[in-house]
Length: 160
Image (cartoon, rainbow, N blue to C red):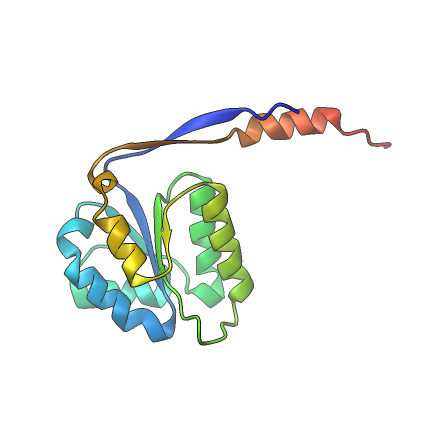
């Protein structure tokens, strides 16, 4: 089965999701303060409490979704699928069990499937935000999911 590919463009003005587990929210707020001049040139989104705290402590405009345990990670993932999130900055806490860990794994997986930059640490976030691509368009290729689903559906032999 031939796999078709399609080009996607991440625009100059990025749609950035900001997420932080409870023990990492302070670190996320400090990171946003440090990078406010860059962040204010982009569209910001975040999960519930993180978005609210970023707005309150930095003054940056940010659209909040539900909190992570209430489906916020999945809302961000859905927007990745719809090409409405370009970058995910997710300060996760590797030392504390999370009740919504399956949602977190789904978010990380969908970011990989759609080949978008994702940072799980401050160091990685620093590399992304200072990249030459933060201020330019970036074109990447992905599998043409629609074409491949159609092709697969046509090749399946099912008895109905």
